Length: 221
Image (tube, rainbow, N blue to C red; front, side, top):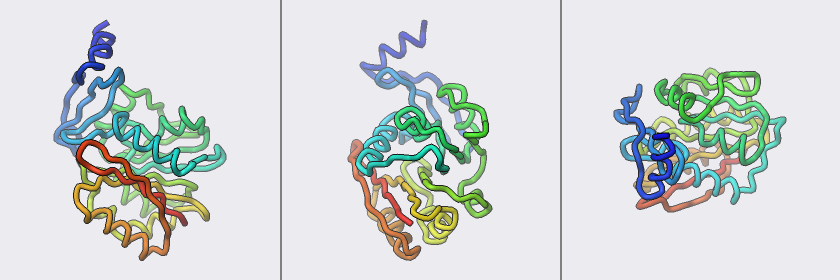
């Protein structure tokens, strides 16, 4: 009953449902916004809010059409925005592997956002994305990189070493969707240079969210 009250009230203003400290985040919040739960950090939406809409819009612009025989990797799984888009909006029934470093986020994803337990078509791994990529023996048709600490992509993931590691696990004619919030020009310029060094090509989608620009780059092998 209280959840329904919060849900309806959230169309007027956001209602915090729970606040806690993450494994790698000072603040994690489940918040009711516009009738649905979202996962926020101190300064950013991590899942199901503005980020969810950015990916929906980007996939539409890129005419993304995943085949259910394909394999998809999500680095920076969060509470499962991209997973839900694939399963619900694209009816994708193929294999998805998600990698998330913060165990508290994984717990919240399963408790509040109905992310399933591991099964033959889905695995959610508690692991650092860079370590996973380095040791990975599988190859993927699509890789989604959505790795943030607040509004920033950690420098490690912008550099050419990481891009080259991604290239190794990307199938021929596969693509990488790389999410960046441009608070300064540096992150976008760094990842563009890394793409060039890795002998990959890209196009991009841009959407302004509040006072920042969200870029999703489609990087092609």
